[in-house]
Length: 280
Ligand code: AMP
Image 1 (cartoon, rainbow, N blue to C red):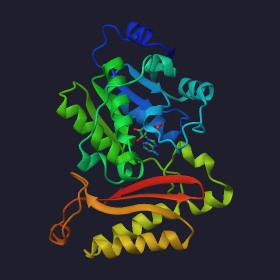
Image 2: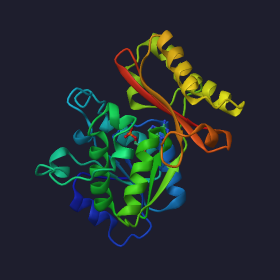
Image 3: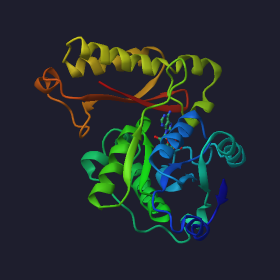
């Protein structure tokens, strides 16, 4: 695996390639990231991964400073366990040599709801860096995790609307044995919080089971899920049952008619904010 830090070196490495598969990450790699890279290798060759903690997508009171940065360990993990051919690990002055004044704004009906409501500016930061990374790597395919469901949808729509030549491929959420979705932020959980954390996934499953059992009172299902987490000490940002196709609310008759839904949640356990979702 070649590790490159500049866009110029990256382009040198990829010259003449026309089936590049790309997996962008913020590092502190876990099995979820490695699974994405594995899937990327089914769709293209060479596989390029990136590690860049993107300041633009962090709010002023968020954890940019304390986000785990473990580049050396990540490189060793990729060398041992992945088919990644080039790792692009730019520093901030390489990605943002001047203030990034041009940006991409997702439409507000997708970018300002759910995660976008609780993290203003988050998706502008995400789409801007993803567009820039796609311009650097120029991949034919890029793999994104369903763990960040809204992000996946926004990136996919951006590529479609700008006619970018990159196909976006989703990967299922990778979980620990107890159901907790793998995340770089899980390392901030205390031992007691780590025991409680899979409760989020259990609550999503309960909601899904209710819908599958014929319930269609969405607001009641959401409220029950919220109450279950609050009772266990979580601070819930949102639990929302939405249509898979556009993340809008589904009407009761759509639920009855079997509209594909997804239940999305974000909640804090202590100071650690976790997100998860489940398709219904
Ligand atoms: P991150 O490093 O957290 O920005 O994530 C980089 C990519 O990995 C994104 O496409 C995420 O959706 C994806 N990802 C993160 N955690 C998981 C997981 N547990 N399962 C599947 N994909 C994941």
